[in-house]
Amino acid sequence: MVVMMLRFAACLLLVAGPAAWTPVVAQEISQADRAMIEARIAAFDAVIKAGRIGEVVDFLPPRLLHSMAGEAGLTEAELRPHIAAQMAEVFKVVKIVSFAMDIADASVATTPDGRRSYMLIPTEIVMELPDARRLRSRSSTIALKDDGQWYIVRIDNARQVIMLRDIYPEFAGVDFPAGSTAAVD
Image (cartoon, rainbow, N blue to C red; front, top):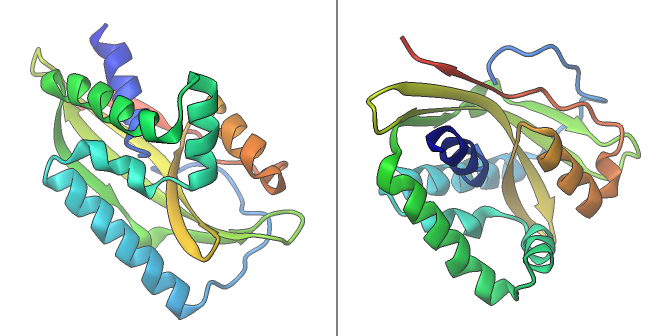
């Protein structure tokens, strides 16, 4: 049960160690866009460190929220507090020990159709379970621009990739690095 809760928490946190993958085509992201991405990451980091876990939904693209709400049979307004409540329950028993997105080691690429540039940011979270065991989750967070705003979405499992591709079909054919979770010694 705790492991399921941990996986759920990690998914909701949007939260790569070394992985064998190659971006489709390297492409530049402007300095202004990079500054916006860095600001979003800093804001996200502040939310996590302050324990305001329910606010992570504010960093998701609106199209993703709309899709999630539809799948849940809720409006977007109903979905936000629902996610916050679920996350609050998880983090009553799971403690975030550390969280980091490594923008210095991020990779910039473009979708195969050339329509969208994006950034893959190595992400690591260490969590402590109720029995004092610690788990390290390594994954990638994708930064993508939609309607002039940069959003971040954790990509580490097939379901997340499928959802991303359903909402943003231009990501079809992009190979994302697999995430991993392991006990910390």
